[in-house]
Length: 142
Image 1: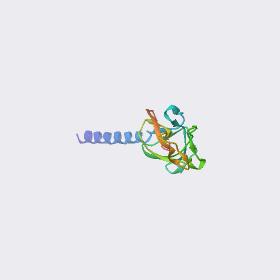
Image 2 (image 1 turned 90 degrees about the vertical axis):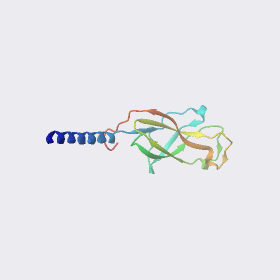
Image 3 (image 1 turned 60 degrees about the vertical axis):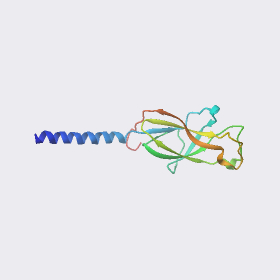
Image 4 (image 1 turned 135 degrees about the vertical axis):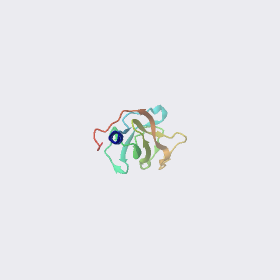
């Protein structure tokens, strides 16, 4: 009787360890490779930093679940854009990444008024699309 109870308890503990180990391999994804619809005033972006670290821009990033901060540069090509080159600065976007979700990034051109000169408020970074995505790290390093 005691042996059976002990075996059941050990089995439950091992199962808990196995599921938490599997969770380590689960991930979400953030992408900037799809061109967003310019009819909605959305444009492509380039990732320059991820969680404060400089990165070489990639089509997508596999990430652990949780909050991640992206620094983005806009790639807006619009005749409505009247700001000087010096106004085209990077902006940050915080995303709470969920497992098995893919988030698509874009720059939203604000068209509420005409932005000119050094006014950098002409755009904001956004997640324009979210979709289910099977994402698994192949190893613990990602």
